[in-house]
Length: 118
Length: 109
Picture 1 (tube, rainbow over the protein chains, first blue to last red):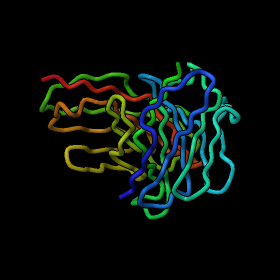
Picture 2 (cartoon, chains in turn purple, brown; picture 1 turned 120 degrees about the vertical axis):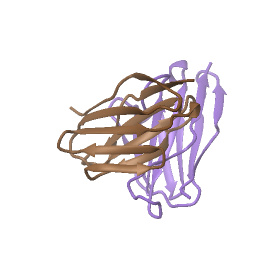
Picture 3 (cartoon, each protein chain N blue to C red; picture 1 turned 90 degrees about the vertical axis):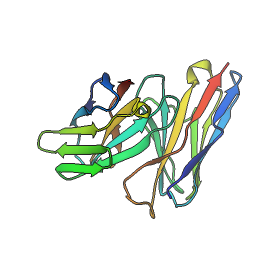
């Protein structure tokens, strides 16, 4: 149980375009979802925390107008990278916490999305 | 500020035992997690400690001392597939995870 999926797993886009990444909890309801980005050989950097039905809470230094997060249901959150630039190229990972999981505080991670902006 | 420290890299031999240490200073404490991350993949959960002591799970064990702000992950009977980064993360008073930079473990035959 407690499976989180992400789509797409890899995406290449041109500079200036927007990319949407989906994060789904497959067998539980995610009251909270987290979005991270990870640069090569670096630890995870929390970008934002989203709770179903409310606005996301962004970490300091993360542009909310550039990284749009929507958590419209208890099983789906989306991250849209708007007007992407090469410096946005990274590994984006979502995680979810919710009722019905073995430990209510444990974060279950999606497999990640590799974004490359050319 | 909040800080998680763990060694950058460790090397061990197949079949041996290795201990990866983690020290932390955080605003509150609601548990400590260890995750394994292979290159290019998302982290996978290994263990969760919220009380002092040792938690054993197969070849992996995790220890916590809250008074010392210290934890370690112990890996026994090392296998080549254990080559990965091991991330220590502490849940603070706001129930957010504070991540360490990870320890890259290299297993040699």
